[in-house]
Length: 60
Image 1: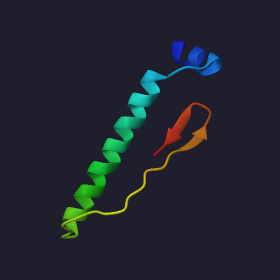
Image 2: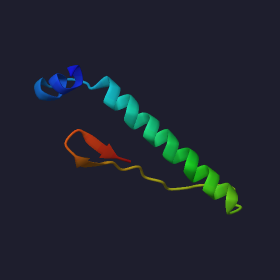
Image 3: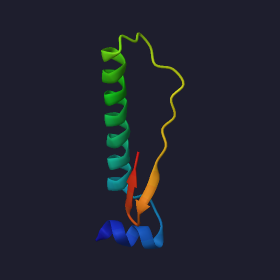
């Protein structure tokens, strides 16, 4: 409820930011695991993006 109020009046949504950071960390972990499985020794030129899929929900 507090996060919803902050969304309306502005300000940092700490729990949301933490969730997005965790999502990026998980995406990185999956990428590294897939690269290792393919025998890669490096990953270069990556870009993270996020998109709002509905109000209050996003994907990385």
